[in-house]
Amino acid sequence: MKSVPFEYRAPATLEETLALLGKPGANVVPLAGGQSLLPLLALRQVRPATVLDLNRVPGLAGVEITDEVVRIGALTRLRALVESAPLRAALPVLPETAAQVANRQIRHRSTLGGSLCHADPTAQLPAVAVALEARLWLRSARAERSVLAQDFFAGARTTARRRNELLVRVEFPRTPGRHCRFEAVTRRGRAGFPLIGLCLAVSLAGSVVTDARLAASGIADRPRRLWEAERALTGRRLDGDLAEVLDAASAEADPSSDLHGSAEYRSHLLRTVIRRAAARLATEGSAP
Amino acid sequence: MTRAVSLVVNGRPYTAETEDRTPLCDVLRHRLRLTGTHVGCEQGVCGACTVLVDGEPVRSCLMLAVQADGCRIETVEGLATEGALAPMQQALMAEHGLQCGFCTPGVLMSLAYAERARLTAEETVSEVLAGHLCRCTGYVGIRRAIERHWKTEEAAG
Ligand SMILES: Cc1cc2nc3c(=O)[nH]c(=O)nc-3n(C[C@H](O)[C@H](O)[C@H](O)COP(=O)(O)OP(=O)(O)OC[C@H]3O[C@@H](n4cnc5c(N)ncnc54)[C@H](O)[C@@H]3O)c2cc1C
Ligand code: FES
Ligand code: FES
Image: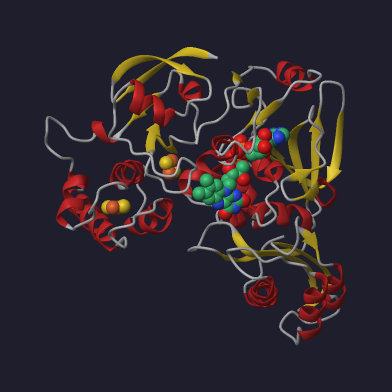
């Protein structure tokens, strides 16, 4: 339970950070909240030569809200997401979902960027990013590019991020009138890694769905949109008969079995969380 | 790589030589000989190693000692004053909030944070205690101790 020996670096500028990350042949891993990286180091599943601490780099944390987007720095703590009043007004599904991650102590350190880059296939926030078509901004010493969340997640703990790139910020588009909800069934208690998580985002005319986004975690090696279920839900009432939506979702999902639950159980839970999310949105709604 | 880190632990300054890879809990226990902080899982799950770093509850197995350089650390050793247990410690004892005591130092530090942050007893149980595993008490005694202590503090204003 001891990490391999490594060198710790904590540069005070983004330029120096990107230069270290981009050194050819260097085996460098970025350290954000450390709440996933330190266990991986202790288990020797990650064996870096250099651990690059991002915590002293200025400008990587913060929430900025414009008419078009909610822009969140990669190093923003989950606690800050939960406590941000402007964010709660602009995109409440984010603080509501962040509050379901782990526990208060871990949320004090965990960051949005770390949660996305860690790419656990059952994690909550990656599913929200996929459902809301978030754009992830990656920067290297030479260039900056952006990737849509659905293209960023490439498999379990695998992303489209190149080794010399840092995730610097995430942009969530704002869609006026859209209602969002994240529902999950977790392994233990109220918070913690879900067995199945679902982000449902809908636009409504009365209670009829005019546009639907569904993305789930725990149904594959990465969070995925449920395209057929989206089609089936469009034009239907949220409080109506959802059998076709549930069948479409079951047909698209491909969960696997592990010690926390069988594939069959997860398929069953997917139907449960879709029904719950729809029922909650139908009765409570949620700001866009 | 090794280097020297400076920590102020329970108000006392320390400097210790440490490897870059060493977590804070190991420096507290092995270098500073402050063995009140317990280490259970070493992967963030159990909460036994919780200490306060600049006032925030942190799992000391999930922070490198070098990251804590220059920080103010509070551990369970700092709770009692002149041999007299702090009120929260007494409440745990009175309500059978511990049996083997392995989880207790971490639980106490999270509770110290919750008290200062003025969380309610209910928030403390549902959100803060949720970050700790206790194999002995079934949490019932810890919960009663929290309720008792919070009530006493309220009465005292
Ligand atoms: C007991 C426990 C329960 C947990 N429960 C949950 C849960 O319910 N849901 C959940 O989603 N997570 C959970 N976590 C994980 C926790 O929230 C993680 O800390 C989080 O997912 C990663 O964030 P971090 O900031 O700690 O990242 P780190 O641990 O620092 O990093 C994680 C990975 O991302 C990379 N990385 C981090 N930031 C960047 C960046 N800006 N650019 C490029 N790469 C980067 C790192 O190199 C590393 O590979 C739990 C953890 C523990 C210990
Ligand atoms: S030893 Fe740190 S959380 Fe278990
Ligand atoms: S008292 Fe034994 S683990 Fe909590």
